[in-house]
Image (tube, rainbow, N blue to C red; front, top):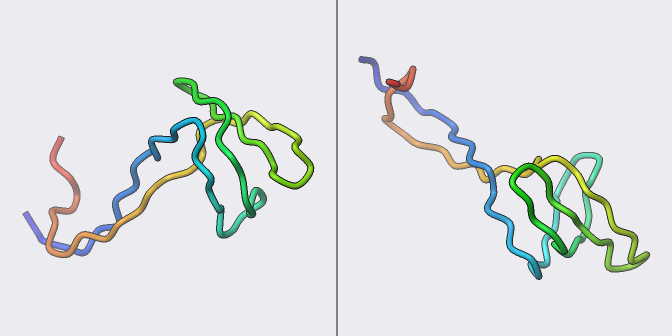
Length: 73
């Protein structure tokens, strides 16, 4: 199996009370995590105090050098 540099994405494990900053995209900015479900996360804007619930959309990414590609099942 060939070795490659691979970017790995994992669903971010939000916790209620976290203060987060989304660096880009349509939801960029500062947020506070106020609810976490299996499929949704609820965020509150610290300025307007409005709350929004979205499907879990944030991912933590890292780059692995020398990992297998494609990944074995």
